[in-house]
Image (cartoon, rainbow, N blue to C red; front, side, top):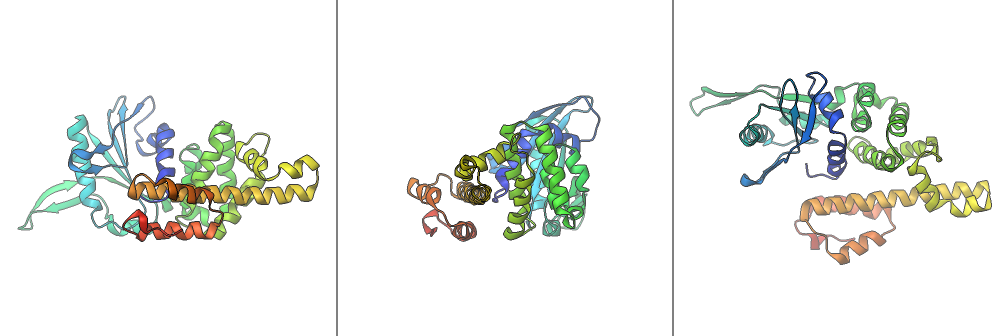
Length: 306
């Protein structure tokens, strides 16, 4: 994974391992889940996420997340599977989670059949392919807050996005503490960008903010603190409305800045301090969005114009 949504996916996988394993490793209850190093850097490979499963059917679960075409994907799957088996001496189950339909164009159904130069079959590799858009939104939400944000990317959610997001929000509020709520909703918003445009996402999540009980939600409290302090102090309805709008703008700016920093770090490593200051002080959402697109095209970080 090396796209703007990667940090969101990484946090969901790291923070809610039990939910992911329950979904993608359906071999019964009572398993112990242990995150393993996915660094295969000895030969310059890095898998997306790897878990050791201890229980009545022990093994290694390898999850590869794909959002676009990748002509080398099938070769990488085979290499990852073989290297992980060699490293951990356990059976390895490889699951490819396809976030968008174009990713399936370079991910044929299992098994993959590799042939020698004379056309004879010399290897048959089995894996599991999960096209996310075919999943039921309610099923993903029911698995818990660590998987629930993916529900927004299903075909099932397209015609009823507000209702699906409301269900997602309910799970987040009911099953996580205040410290996690803002983080999970930000992850959901970032992932939604894989399927929906910015205007739709802004409108959709504005409704979520309105639905959250500010007494129970760190997300809404943060917005109120940043944007409605004056309005609440005066007790004036107009001041509150203006404060909420300002808080939403500040929240969007903060998210855009963080997305840009995440992508820059993924592509180029450490971000120079001068550029870091420019990004943190930037107050134009559209220019930050343009900088995100620019980051995907430039070859060196000094070429970024913001």
